[in-house]
Length: 438
Image 1 (spheres, helix red, strand yellow):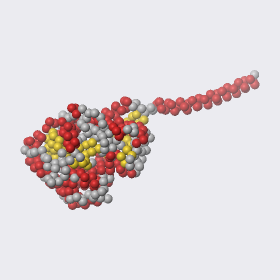
Image 2 (tube, rainbow, N blue to C red):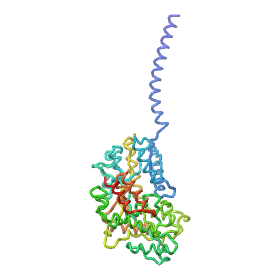
Image 3 (cartoon, rainbow, N blue to C red):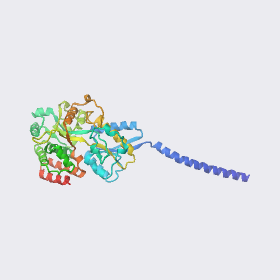
Image 4 (cartoon, helix red, strand yellow):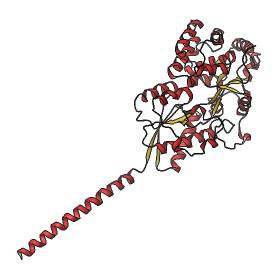
């Protein structure tokens, strides 16, 4: 009995050992499956610059993300936002390292993104996008996102620098909607005398100030020459129109064209002053159309029927009426270090087309994507700007998206100095030449 019991005990121990091994093996496999089941999602960290709850683009982004997560239950989008100037600084700071908290981020193509590409920080999308994707896009719209034959982002929409005018304020002041610079000066004088701000500038946000200078430079220097300068083929300051543009900004400031303290006025402040009738004009991108039509009645108290969109006023004997500021430059890029390369490319393709076709200015022909739109659904301002764009032939991107980052920052900050009582065109030119002509 003892021998038999010993044998049975040994068999039991052996069986238990085998069972333990089998269970261990099964347990390892089960743990791996359970891990996937407990956490079935991929989280993409996406950054963008639409921080204001009143920003139509933020609303479009949020709605698009919600829809994407519903149709892609395995994907979660975690979003980080900052205001434009802080956003530019933070993105640059993140990419001095591996930007580990960023999978996808909104940025600008052309010269702005070039620093990241030169540092090998961004993911080329060619191998992750459908091979025929270019056929879905407006010709030329990929140019600002393609470097050495590699696509790093997809276009969403084009923009057009527009002078929005409140006809009611002009009528009250006895001024004409300006078609040229002399008429602009006349309007500034009459609107100031009527107790209104002629031009809401938003100059505290440097890119707003820069757009005003760039609009004048477009008419003084011309699109072809400016593009040569932005590409480094010509020097800034070589054409005397650059200095004359600075002098015109200073002239407008001294006349009170931008109100008493333009550098205290943010982009949102400028929008509000135009929308409440405090200011007669707002020079900004065509993206402002959506803000006008989608703001609450408390934010916009003027009649939108009184708002008209016109091109940048001409300067006598200079420039070309077919030149314009704008183009395709906004897009989403992916971090080369992301663990989810295909998922990033898929989301970029989705969000880019969404923004292009469904949101930006209400299906009015600005999309980079070849999707049929119903022009009957567009608002009057969108139709006006679309007609202006059709006449444009030579476009110039905003300089801070075309210049290298350091030069872009110096340009924007330098233009802000022109909105001060002690401004000097000579000092401005010297500092700009040092920053841009490197």
